[in-house]
Length: 187
Image 1 (cartoon, one colour):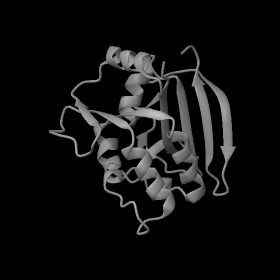
Image 2 (tube, rainbow, N blue to C red):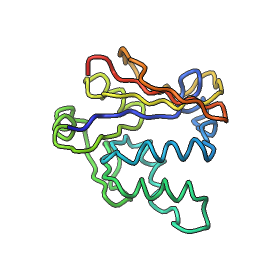
Image 3 (spheres, rainbow, N blue to C red):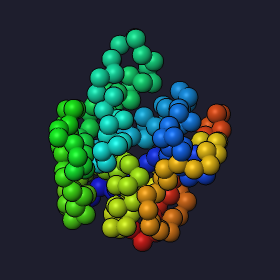
């Protein structure tokens, strides 16, 4: 049975974007990027909301040659190598291979997907992750906390989310980024 993991990059004050919608403050250096790549290798399926998918689909076309840094080529290979499910009522179609479009978020379908999976699953996008947390589906939270306060923007949690978390691991990077890994209590 797979576990559902919510992984995101966040400011110290808990935002994935600033007030203008920018997430430039989460630009990882090579050390952090390589760690992210390695943390995603065991994941078999990514579940995305529309907004995050529209950002991530960039990786479908990243060249696999020396025109881009090695850490980016590696991430592109990891991303293209997994199945993706996009939850959106507004997208007409998806623009990447190994990707299906679901109109509605169905917690029971995610439970079945977890039960049938030999690999862990990743949920991305604050709103979708919030819905999965409220449904009791998220087993683990991984935060890459960037040493910046943005003072407002898009919360990493969506609305009306509560959960008790148990710290399982932490790692500090030379850039000041901290990775925190939590199990969701009771999952």
